[in-house]
Every structure is written in C-alpha cells, then in structure tokens.
Image (tube, rainbow, N blue to C red):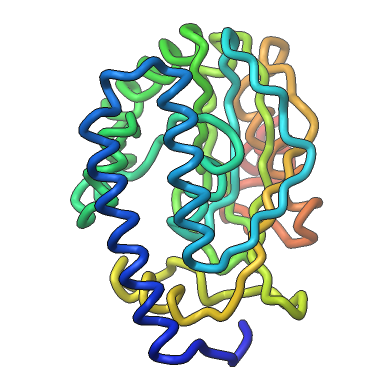
Length: 267
C-alpha cells in the first residue's frame, strides 16, 4: 500500500459527496421495487460507478461475459473488501450472497437488502440449504448471482480455500459459472492493502479508503465453466485455480485437503 495520503480537505469533500450519494441511493431504493428488472439493473450499475468515482477508484475490466437477459449465470470471486460488491455491480448485473452481519451495517445494509441481496448465516447448515434454494430459483428465472466462496476476506496476497456448498445451485440449474478475479493496486502498480476489509470495523475501513489518493480496481473474468457435467467440488477447484493463476497468488488450502479438493487419503 502506498504511503501517500490525501489532504484533510480532500478527505472531507469526499465524505460529503459520499453522504450525498448515499442519500441519492436511499431515495432510489425506495422506488426500486416499482421499476422493471432492466431499469433496476441500470440504476444499481450507475450508483455503484458513482460510488467508485467519488473515491477515485479507477475500474479496469477484462473478458466481461455477455449479459443475457433470459439466462442467469453464477459468478465466483475472491474476496478482499466490501468494495468488491461495488466493483462487480458496476460491471455486471447480479444478485449477491453476503454474510448476515452486513444487514446491520449503517446505510449499506439497508441498501443491500433493498437491492435484493441474499443474506446467509454460514455456520447454520439449514440456512445454506435455504439460500441454495433461492439461488437456484433466481438462476432459473434468469437472474445472475455472485458468491464469495472463501467465506472470508484477505489482503489480496493469498487465496483462501473455496467452499463448494453455495455452488450446488449452478450444477442443478445447468448454468455457466464464471471465475472473477479482483485486484486492487496503487498508481505505481503495487498491491494496495488499504482497501482490504480484514479485522477492522466498516467505519474504520471506510475512513482508510477515503484516505487513498487513487486506487485501480481490476475485475478480470475467466473462461466460462459448464456446470452440468461437473460436481460442486470440481467447480470450486477449477474456479479457485483460475483466479489464483490470474492474480499470481498461492492458494491457502485447508489442512486436510489435497490439491484435488478431496480430503487426504481419499481417492
């Protein structure tokens, strides 16, 4: 992360603009359910891009999948920051699966709920089953869904093991799965860790991001993976490998897991 910081004046102006943007988002969210899905997607994309612009985050994308209004796909991404949601939303129209605690975040939680985010308590198996049913219904209906199968965030320097449980709906729906690699860099090309949301509060994270002079956010999609002929663990390993290769980082596997994705000692 660059040691450069913005001035107090710049930081204050950004914060004021961000608050105004939130107010705009709140007003749009009230009207959101009354618009068609096509207009909702445009509204969400425009709002996300505006948010990134205020923070001077330059978005770079690669290999963005075609957007078919009638066929839903699943995106699988690495997870660094709550900014990941905005980076993806500014690029591709999707519904998100997020941890339940986000629902209680000031403003962002309410906006996420109004935008149709699916909240999950990962430690509850019954909640995973409920979420998978909903994801499957959305995919069949034509909505695309993104999941963060690491189940945690990192500073971008390592990729955590991908849990396969939330990928089952893609198999059942016979849809396509696209690995999505997210990376944040400083203007000099160095990895930016200031945007990482790791062991800090959402307020601390926001203040740290407001302090960044400029950030480049990259969202690079891998080739489509056909889900119909594979099981969820195979999908997790394929997506994991594709993202790690794109970002040139290592995969931090679970202690009892081999590279095949099966527990050690099993075929």
